[in-house]
Image (cartoon, rainbow, N blue to C red; front, side, top):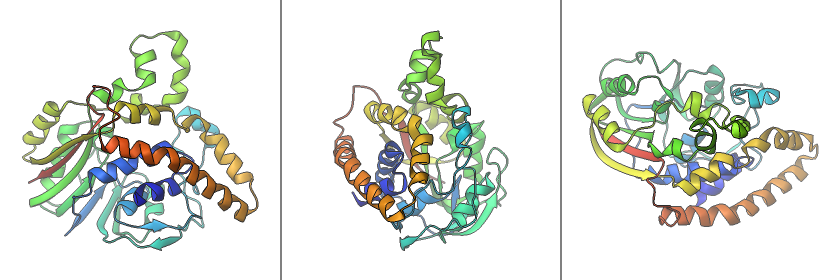
Length: 311
């Protein structure tokens, strides 16, 4: 449960994200990052850092270097900003490091560098051929394949750079994921103008970012075509959790961030944050436990596949 609280510390203004990521981490608890390793699409590195056992001081959160809040509802990535002085206060180092961090956004890699968690950094668009030799990596983690244009090409590339016997962990959307979106169900499917306002909730997530959602059999075909074999498969993220995440505090984020910035007394801010975390843990902890016990299911397949593949 410590991972959930640590995630809530970091994502406190978006508690629904903390819940999702805690479930991700539980799914991956048996995956070993070792040898020459690649975090493919690492972002700012915070999630992988926490999964590796790293902890931050309560004074740090994932929103200390964000921008474009005035363009939040125009689908701008508020995290694609780097501010001088960004220095996460680390209270516990992770148990391992990744050899290489790869992402296409330089600002995110600058944040990842501040974690002392990755040994090397590469700015690269993962839609293109990966800039590595064949059989380069013993372990790979990626949570971005479904953001890319061609999943077969992407997984072929992962297979190419993986060593024989090497393993890769992937999070991939199930066909049910878009079904759980209020925007998709109420507006996209029916084009009902009454629900056009939900585009401000979606902010391009389903129309621009989550490009690929497939059934297990469809992903299995793509995986096997790449020369990889499935050694573990689980599904996670029930409809209940996904609908909590679909709204959460997302629409309130810009004003919440302004309120935080307006608190000049840093001790008072930390006191508020501590109370906030304790309050949300009263809700998130039982939700997490119910999800792990499959008690939130609504007779529908879960939203995400977790695969461990081997070459």
